[in-house]
Length: 157
Image (cartoon, one colour):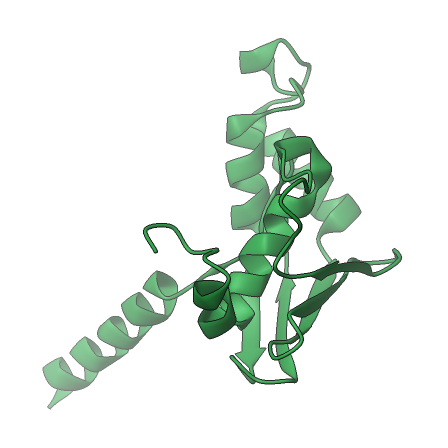
């Protein structure tokens, strides 16, 4: 009985770690967050919430798009970089809401003005890395996969 209970605990822990999903934030150089909850998928009131944690900053600092670490010509070790961003941004939370029927998305960054998008985007819409649109597109496809398929936003479809 002890072995099976231990196996269930290890399996449950492994599943919850494996099921961790990104909350898309990064466009060119930033970090992604971690998805905390998602409700109402494919509805008029779809919501997803996320935060940032050590793993998000670890990935960012190892990739080091801002050339802050010693390995990329900066002054910080990866550990110092992670600690700095944890202190500055470690309590940040994010929220996106979508009305899948209308094709609208509203993203609320911490301490900032909401960003809004309506899908499908016009053919001439700027979807370059620097436009900031890429994470909004990813958020919409996570909240409204049926609408995203309809708008041909999912790869391979």
